[in-house]
Image (cartoon, rainbow, N blue to C red; front, side, top):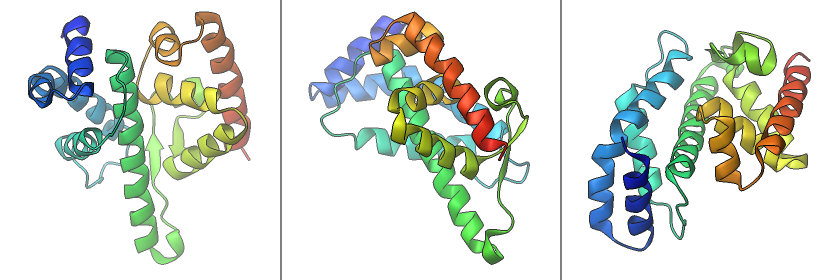
Length: 186
């Protein structure tokens, strides 16, 4: 997938060209599906949500984005990753509510989790709550975690999306990881 073509189509779609969206979807669908598969590989084995359903739900939410000025391919995938995270958290909350007292909380077995929080098994709801707390006092660090960890963006792509320097992303990434490790070990 050529990034310049995706960015051009995003800009055209953002300017109101609905046909650009029709041309964009085939270019990004496979990558969105890979992103969804990556998320769902981290979920429990009996998870009821399938990658295509996660992509479809994220797509519906993306299409509903009003007044969003797409900046780049990285920006698009950052937003898509955030939406997928929200969908999975909503799904986890619904499942926990169905259980007696929410005792059977969902766990994410994340291959990258050790790099972020020092553990390979992370509760998706606890991680989401920790990210929300982090966002209360440092929204940029929380956004960096979303973009790097959930969207899989590089330091350079994250810096581009946020409009900050490479060094700022590296520094904030280290601080956010340390903070999350401490928060989730409580």
